[in-house]
Image (cartoon, rainbow, N blue to C red; front, side, top):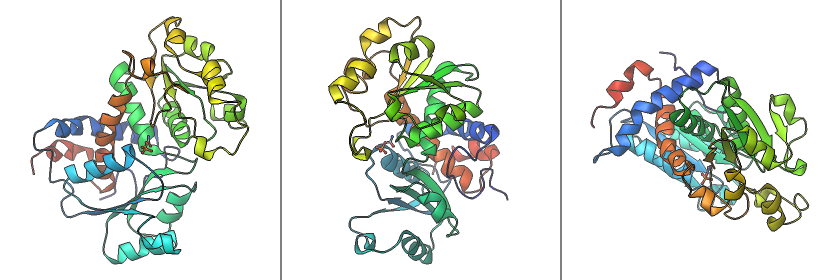
Length: 318
Ligand code: CP
């Protein structure tokens, strides 16, 4: 049987709108599993999945692990500290040794852009990109799409602005690919030092002022300032950044409509987003986290060769 997504999930750039909608549609019935007292179905029983996290993560790592366990897969977590990577073993040697122990899938987060594809081309197991450098974070893009779709229903014609540190953001790239494929109007807003050159070539509008972005948008996806990836000189100071580009309650109150607020996390409260916005009535930040488990269940399910017609059967108890 041909898996509907192919062998790997490396980014949303490679997916069609049909494949993206298939993942979103598959995730919807899977959400209910996490609401049960016994959160377990037998769908991936017998499958072995390795989570290779070579960079810090809370949401992605834990939600992949929940998704795997809720579908009855056997899981192993590997971090660079404590593994032979810390002794200089290469990524491919690590993965090949894991394959020699007969695994089925690898979920990888890595600081180098392209690491997931590099691995996918060299091993037979399915590879899922859980964030590679500044390239893509496809399951984050998908959970953002699902959260927007839950709120708005049809997405085509809606306006979403990605705000802040677009330059260093793999979340921004996955969102731009996914949103534009589904017919959403996309914009970015931030200081020019934090916007990639020729970002307009990706089909997005550019705002230099947050007030103008808020006036235009139905939803803002507020991006974390990735201070760990900045050498120096991108912004004058955090206080200045918040003063000019911060998403604040005062700015949102001047908007012509209610603006939905997303943030992929972790947040720098009081820098790119104020606490009363992050915790306010238009925030769906924790809905994003909840949807992350269902999206990752759907991706694991589809990559393992299951068809959407089996989604209902997947809901059966273990
Ligand atoms: N959104 C996201 O990728 O968060 P983590 O880095 O905590 O996984």
